[in-house]
Image (cartoon, one colour):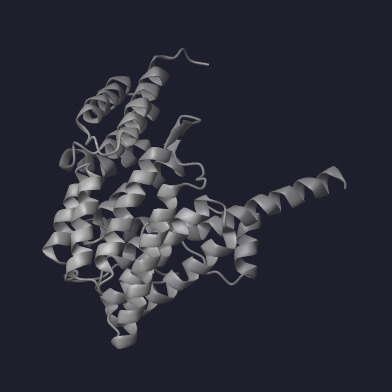
Length: 340
């Protein structure tokens, strides 16, 4: 095969994989492909979540996912026909998987890929249970919140299996999640959590290369705009409920990775580190942003904070505690390394 043709085929393969990962990159709670949607106007609506669910989410973001999982399991016992306990347990398990899988590569802190593991299988089982319960409830009576829960479950699944390279499974889960979020938006346009998904879609679709854009067009996938995505994610992080933390975290992460807007990314992320100072993931990400800004003292302060956090992390998962400490040491070492 001529070299030019070989390079073209290689580019198409890579861009096809990237397009398949789009459903993964809908990420946490990505909801709908309706690029023309605008952020909800007026007072955003909160979901009718049990207090145990809200308590568990606060426990999770404070840096204790195992304690949060125990709260969510009690919710599963007390409300066995509701998907919310299983959905939130799956989210807590995702944050554990995320921290455990983080690595520094080319000065960026992120996940590259996931292999098979018992932890991942438990996550998938919990998420599948949440999806099944939500579908059953929808058969009994259609509501916007239940469509959101179903969509969240399918797209949490898409996120993990996408990182494992399951392209067709990722696409199927993403499409099913999309259908649920579209219907939720029809039933109740003021549920601001849907803007997390809309914003992530609009942002990521605008990062595709020219070849991938052609493939997207041929596959009938709508376009989007990063500017629209930023507006929608901003609305979600200010007015959302279930996804308010994730909208802020992923907006900061995307501004850092795709646009190299490190200053802006730090401003978006910093409120999370102040509200949840015991969360090692938030501190690690802010440390990485400060390092990219060459603010070595601030970066070092973040990494030293993670070292201190790791010493007080629950003993229920020593591997997670060790991983946080190792990432902090790696970040500090990079700050002290001579320039290339």
